[in-house]
Length: 311
Ligand code: C5P
Image (cartoon, rainbow, N blue to C red; front, side, top):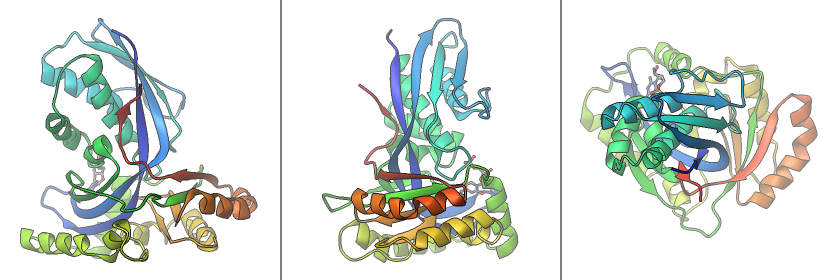
């Protein structure tokens, strides 16, 4: 069996609304997620020693069974019953770690797709989705990627499409010295909002329906301009993290941006532009200030797919 390579793109949240706290301790969400052209890659090689070994070019990332790549491999192997299967996996990181860009979830989704193929297991998309949902809230989205409405914990997906030849592009900022823990951000949200159970499924469905009809979905469909973006975790993180406030202020100074927001639980921040040229111009205009404040920055397009095998 030959080596396989899998691309694992990052995502941003174009919308993140916390609807309520569920009895299982997770939060019920209504989100729009978008894959972007900033991606890690996984190279997979089969072995017959029953070991799943992971190497990564970023020393700070754990490569033991706490990594979603290894967890995905272990779950596939357990579900298939072929316990002797092994793989050497080499992960090249380009997506910043702990950034709200679903880097870890995308790596896990790429491992599900890649190892299913490498080991010839033949699990269908629906089975991979159910494994992904058990492993992490953002993982089901990362399997398909593109532009999707995500409900529940993030596992109920409805695909959306840009009705334009040129979807927007983004300028992304992340301060390398800062990361935000997702459980911390949700925990703080719970503290700030108190008990905010929306117990009736009918209430959730009403809010889902409101998002399906919101101006943001009009902009995605090409009918109307971009509204301000909503991320309920931004309201939690922004007051606590100075670099988030600085980064948002810098992005708001860019000319011609369509919208500015934090992604996921942060601290990554982005500004949207009509196209990559505009994003690059805005980047060039502010490059010195980004450096002065110590930000890393990227310009990239939207991606229409999630984790995928490379030819
Ligand atoms: O599912 P995942 O492991 O990505 O979630 C990390 C943590 O984020 C959870 O343990 C939980 O504290 C919080 N979370 C949440 N509601 C969600 C997703 C995540 O409270 N829908």
